[in-house]
Amino acid sequence: MTRILVVDDSDTARALLARTFELAGFEVSIARDGAEGAAAALHLRPAVVVTDLDMPVMDGHQLLRLLKSEPATAATPVVILTSHGEAPARFWGVRGGADAYLTKDGDPAGLIATVGRLAAAAPAPAPEKAVAPLGPLDVLARVVRQLDASLFRSTILNSLLERGLGTRDLHAASRAILEVVAGIADAHLLAVGVTEPDAASLDILIARPTSLRATDRFTAAMLAAMAVPAGIAPDVAVTGSAEGDGDADPADVVSVPLPMPESTGLLAVLPCDPPTFAATSGTLLSELAPHAGAVLDNARLGQHLRELSTHDGLTGALNHRAIVELLAQEIERAERYGHTVAVVISDLDHFKRVNDAYGHLAGDAVLSAAAAAMRRALRTSDTLGRFGGEEFLAVLPESDLATGLRVAERLRAAVAEPTSATVLGRRGAVTASFGVASSAEPGRAASADSLIALADARLYEAKAAGRNCVRP
Image (cartoon, rainbow, N blue to C red; front, side):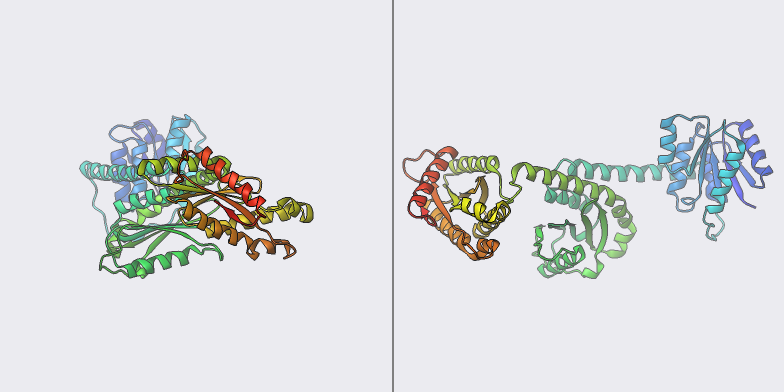
């Protein structure tokens, strides 16, 4: 016979419910409050628990959370039967894991039907050895453990959200996740990977000194698991020292997917002690995964939004406002530390002819190809911006005029290569003219406007000299 446990502090309500369930063919056990109900449920293992909310010692919400947190009763259906039909009480009951939420003024036939359905669908309890009855202190100890575990998880989650949701940079969000996970998992290496349709990023945290060989193998395993599309170069960032002599087996890597709507996220950990990690931290990773995915997606969207406001949509270079602001910042930094900065302004030669002869789509393709060619020719520390139309501005930190001239010549050669000409089916070559200026030049006031004006004047000199050349 199917056993139902009724938990209610009202003698009348208990008697009526017991009679109702017995007439429906159930075997009924009763408890007078949440603490007594918890002890009975853990000892008797009923098919369904039906509980009131307002009770002394332990209320129905606390009983519900305790039963759902205990392995022996986690799958036991719990029906809340209460006089409270208010939305907050219903929300908290369902959020706590209640399988049904009913009010006492409802139809008894509906209650019987609900309990019968839940009892029929519930998994049969696994055969277990006899369990001794629990006393009040045993129940209290379990409640305290459950509350402590909930507080621990809430603290971790709050730390993750506080550190991660405030950033609009994918790498910063990934590092925040890794640092939080490193605090709850003893691991040699941790990583967060994000694969987007047109980009991929991988952040690795070396939590404990390990060998470079182990780090390289871990990185390779992560990149393989991320399934980066062909033609995309992953942006890999490593934090920590890989100069230790410790080694680890990549076969021990534990990974969990991080759900993201339009991308694929992955969190991976190489534990120091895999069995201990599985027992103490494995479940935590799975619980954190949805929240970590939300943090990453929020950072991804914020980063894309920032890029839309600072980058030219056609060429991917910084837009006019962003490149001028960057130049002003570099000039200020150069003055503070006694360095110099150079600028290069370029203009595609006879670009109007391209648009007139081949159309604006071909012109857009030429602009994109020229920008890509110049970015490849720049140093890592340099930045390219679209100054306007077919004009580009390159900012070269810690550079004098001679350095600027060398960089400009590389840019000129890069644009003149067949890269941009192939866009036109080799029916015409694309070249550009360049003007260079540096804050190191004698008698020059170092400001963004003055450097740009000087470089622009020299650009016109290059145009007058026959184009496809560089002028200081």
